[in-house]
Length: 111
Image (cartoon, rainbow, N blue to C red):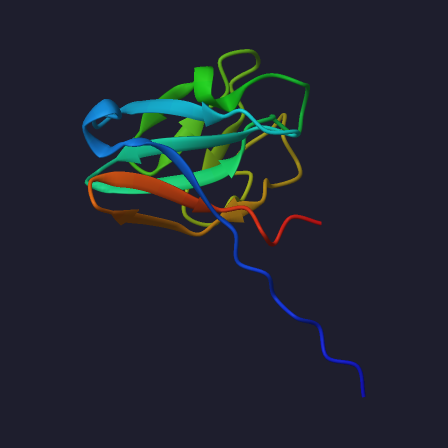
């Protein structure tokens, strides 16, 4: 039997104070991850819209959803699910934690 190990790699994004509610930033890695502050929580998803290559961090945040500014596809920040056309595929989500006043994203599970 083969066992897969899960590598946890917490990467610092920014200070909590630097990401106010209703705002987003990107973790500058390849491919980039968007980090959102919404409704008192932080969320991390792949930054690229699955409909057409465009940054979701540049989108419109409404509660725990983000709407792509290019063609208005919406994604659930908690699950990554595509919520309406033109997007048909969801985006990957990542664990987020806050520690010592900073936001961290676990990028170790990227495949």
